[in-house]
Image 1 (cartoon, rainbow, N blue to C red):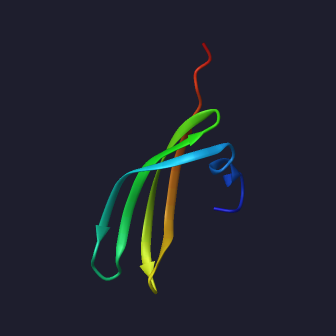
Image 2: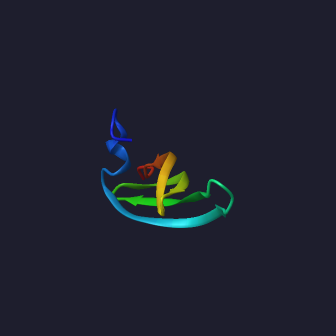
Image 3: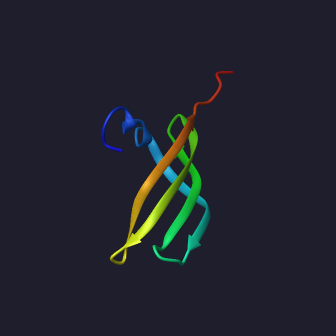
Length: 72
């Protein structure tokens, strides 16, 4: 996430809203998380796969799509 042009994930960030969490209590314990990200000049949506490792949630995968407002 810290290489390439991934800085766009946080550029202009204002807030994040989680809309769905689905936890799998198996071994390993995982979760699917999704929601929206609000930016100064637009909005985006994200989904992430997480795994609980030694009591802490770690990000295994992260996808996002950023939307920009349509000029009027």
